[in-house]
Length: 297
Length: 264
Ligand SMILES: Nc1ncnc2c1ncn2[C@@H]1O[C@H](COP(=O)(O)OP(=O)(O)OP(=O)(O)O)[C@@H](O)[C@H]1O
Ligand SMILES: [Mg+2]
Image (cartoon, rainbow over all chains, first blue to last red):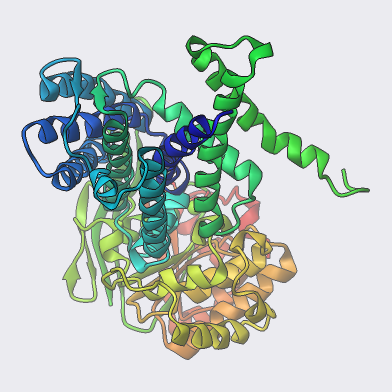
């Protein structure tokens, strides 16, 4: 693998670490299987790219993307909590609606950001090479977000959210408004996913209506893969697992595509993804079987 | 003080599965009273406790806790005044969280939860002391996930969590039923001890007539959604299990089929 391809894999891996954080919040912390992600990722890209072409400051455009994603997550949560629609179905409804909304926002299936300023433009002024700019910039974002999540999940509110997801009965008996916790958690989760979409659009130079396809699977693969690599006994380990899982997933994809004797091409990406997700799901069981202490059943 | 007046609860109204679980329950529990509740399966005991806690919305009637009418309030809004220990030890504690985190959740009950750290260093010392009082050696395991504890240990923790803060009433729904006899006796003694020390108002459901008479100040029996008798003071003191059975037969007009009430 060339250095550029390697850095490219790290860059995308870091963007998707944010998606993995979002998926970790919904699937693991809230126990809410959320497919909104496939809509909120392109939503982030669409809002950010469109606003930048309108001449907005890229930082503000990114902030607007996060807000839009948080609102999308809030809608899914609201459908579930208030209207009592099954969580999975609620998220599919929002995802469907977002397809139309994203087209409305962009006005066309694709918005290019050629020559427009992005959040990565600061690195130009610093004279950093373009292929280093995104990995460095995104690493800073990922570390900052991980730090925030670590702080949040250990706060009173975060602990209440974890209880609401793990044992709603107990949470209510301890005075926790579980519906409110789901709203906040889902908004946070999808806000992060939209941030990932906004950064992805800015680093690739365009937002596309199809950029969200399969994002949930990639996020889930990263979370599960990370759990298989690091047994997440603490929040810190779980967050590190998300980052590690996401980057390793990208490296695995890049390696598979770069290995000539396999004869794989870019169009085989979905096949590779499916195979890797299946592996990530099976891996924890396999690991347990391999590392089983001797003499125990 | 707890005041329940003319409480009616019906599940699945208008469907073939309609169950009329509470048919006009009136109950006033003064501050500091320990009430035990008996009754056969399906009598409505859990339903009464669920209605007081806010898990079930009654069809009609009124529930006053302290001096507040809470009939319409959701569970989490009543939690400041109402604490519970469930029959299933898994329900009262959050197994993926540590002992310390569970206690922190209970300590914040009824307060605003913000972005301050959930566990402060001052809490740690207090938690250690509180947990040490249980006499189970758990004070050295505050960082362990609570799911690693045995059922009895978890139930003891649930009790501790329920009584960490001042409350108007403690609801116990067969909270020793899932435990082995020795552990059950321990948890029951612990309950009596905490109730005595904190001067709590308690409503305790039990399947054992013996326990119902041995513990607390007042005993009532529910049958088909109604309180069929309610004894306290001297009358209660002189009551034996055969007396209870006779009382049940005369009041309900039927023999007691449920042997389980005799046991224990
Ligand atoms: N959520 C519910 N939906 C429908 N019916 C219910 C529900 N909860 C309780 N019931 C019914 O209401 C009646 C009273 O139930 P409840 O659980 O209060 O009895 P109980 O006195 O606690 O009995 P046990 O001693 O078995 O715990 C029963 O017939 C029960 O089947
Ligand atoms: Mg019951």
